[in-house]
Image (cartoon, rainbow over all chains, first blue to last red):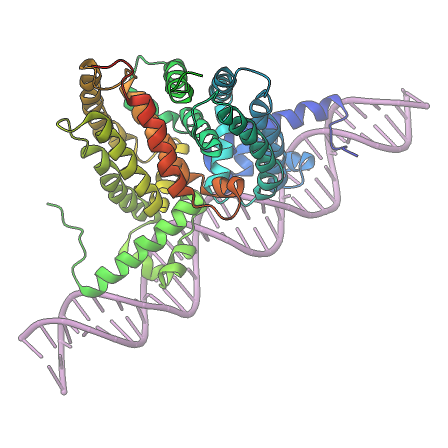
Length: 207
Length: 207
DNA sequence: TCAAAATTTGACCTAATGGTCAATGAAACT
DNA sequence: AGTTTCATTGACCATTAGGTCAAATTTTGA
């Protein structure tokens, strides 16, 4: 069913080079801002050659988005209902921040897409993301009902984790401009965010 | 010194129509994704007529960015060292969220710009934003030193306020897709964010 | 080694886009 | 009423961008 995977050595190599180049370009310029020439240049291929591997600009973008969504949702999937509530959520924050640090281009690609109204991913958003979030929100709500977490809206808790962690990838330029030189935004963010969320998630009254 | 303000009635009206249209288009498509034809259409003018009022696409964008920065920084300016620390910061959160609710296009325009590496606003970022943030961060640090606020990195506190509040404008599509129908994201966000920040800002030990 | 299949590219096409300009139409001022 | 300034536009231009294609080159497998 799922063909499309490269077969030959040469296809493997070039497809990867194209996707790598496209990620760089799309994440920095957005869909319309990116050009096939830029992508081809970066991939070290001619434009017609690039179009030998992918039928269109859209197709390249779609391939990136598909790969992205898979990676992007993993950290949330790992949230374990059987674990310690506060530590589970903090671990999620940590994983999400690592993703921002290690895959900033993917984060920006996603941000670009959402910003422009998500014309190319509204489907997956509703079909994949929403069910997963609803499921995990229910887990969190369960913890809260047991008094093992401070009471907060679970959906918005998740939003605020996304917002704060992705901010360091998406707004990297701004963060660095404001902090000035001599800072490591991501390592500072880690201790800050863990403190922030720990203090608001830890239940106030003793059990 | 500062001329450039429209003089005649007709100039006033058309300049405003252009900026309004441009805000709509730029915020939705980014700089490169926006076209003069789209802007002209929305403004109800012909393209040459549009270029009679602004010399270039760049100029329109620059005008928007300049106006934006002014509005964008105001809420932070209002943070008052003489007020109650927790309430001052919560009021800032509230103002910032209102800005996201009432001016989502401005928020997205800004986000687009930063995402693409801020090629057109790195100057103001360093010259205006950084000093203001540093000043207010010092105020907050002062409050913390007096034990009137829980201890947190002030710069990152500000970042997390930006991130969480702007998220509701910039990622509006995603938020609504995940929440599903029947929600008012902004009003939910208000109570969530106030709770979140109040619980992490309120000092733990009694004074 | 040699034909078949896969890969690469120069040349080209069409549509879109930012911008120009001379000419026309509307206002404003005297 | 007439003239000068302001506003508007149709036609046009150069460049860029996504995409096609036939021909050439390279790789693969018998």
